[in-house]
Image 1 (tube, rainbow, N blue to C red):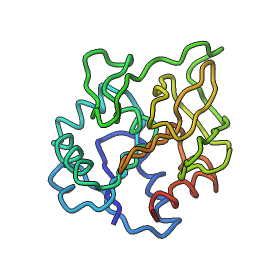
Image 2 (cartoon, helix red, strand yellow):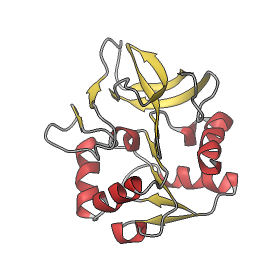
Image 3 (cartoon, one colour):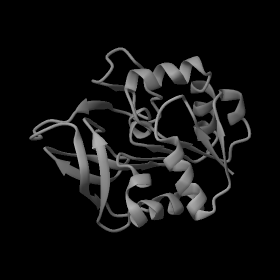
Length: 194
């Protein structure tokens, strides 16, 4: 069963609709204790890095999320849910991400305007399983994750940045699969069925 983390903000309903569409069994939880029996965890995200970091702490979610990852439970972060996998962000100086991926989230440089809003191309790296071929997905972000060894796909908008990460049980997508039509549904299905 997929455990969807509700931290009090975000695009929860749309994400749950995608899980319903693909027929994936799921539950929605709001506190850390409920993660104890999770076999897969989905962390959606819309909002501010600092607010999400505080919500993870206030709801007792940080420790159980880190324990889940450490024990090999697959985790998928969407948009801000991907950014919080990293250590820190320009969006909230002093706020701590989960730190399961090394690196700092920074404001997108060189773009004509922010936020990066709308459809853009995602180009996979060899071995990418969530996005195996180049496709267009829907974005809504002003901050971006660094390209590291965990990068499975990139997008160019002002600069080129990581838009899919995969490292052991940890995966993330910067775009919104729940707003990206059938290609987005396919991304969630690939993760759910892996």
